[in-house]
Image 1 (cartoon, rainbow, N blue to C red):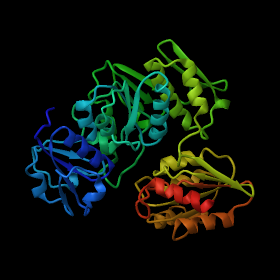
Image 2: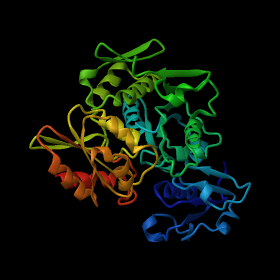
Image 3: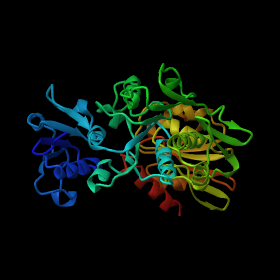
Image 4: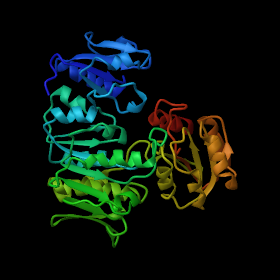
Length: 425
């Protein structure tokens, strides 16, 4: 694609949008940046040649550009884009200029841990870029001009909505459960967006899917399709990963991640590493040394026999349920934020939940759904921590696993998780 002199509109001034703008300017495009918020040019870090249209998404904005780049957080259906306009997302544009092989990882839960771990293992043998939805925009590696062997990309459903020709050399789908139902008209629309990850693969490329997932298990696919089954890959205290006569046997006792659901993430990362030809010993060493990521069942501290865990990354009920299942003893569970779909009643089946503390926009829904176990409603996260402490005794665990997005009170889940840790400490 020749971008020199091309009239391009970038919609959304977040990290991805700004990275896209800088890449397009470098390629000689005539760039306009549009955001419904009022923007401060001096704080954006963009070239002075970039035209800014802010404060609205009026139809006139979308009429003249030859190409429109949508940031992942922008819902195309909410914009007055004329029929016939060429609209793509960041991943499609990245793919056009990318020269590396690609591992693409998606799923409702676990994709960040899997992407990070996969990248760390592949770095033992290759030059690797890790980015996408994980926090580093894909254009960053193109702007820097760094040649890499593999790009390991975490892809959200939002990013997968607007692909046309993109396909990875290896695609991984960990699971699909209801999420972002505040954006999609139906769960089916969300599923279809996720499955775009391999829609352009020819059959020669590799697909790895979770056999235990209800949605994925119904798919009828041909080609190099591999399945992993958490009921079968653990034998005699070992997590066994196999590909093409290659095998890694990981001792469960040496794995530092808390929670059986992490075994699926580890399996996927190790499988990709075997496909790419990483040595068995390197795969084992990286996995054994990996203690997890911030905000994902992160141990904070222990005080007077009460243990505190930060799981702010759990923005869906299914993810929080997986967190609850990681503990055997009594839990005081802190929930709250903006509800994204699914039923809060899912928590009623867990007998180890001693008390639920709820806050944020979803607190009324939580109170109604869990009324049989007498949840406590509070006004803020600091009050939630105080309340949880008042119920805790030695041997209990206070688990902050909100099951909701953070945007009612926080900039993102990271800010929310860090505040929880500060409050605890």
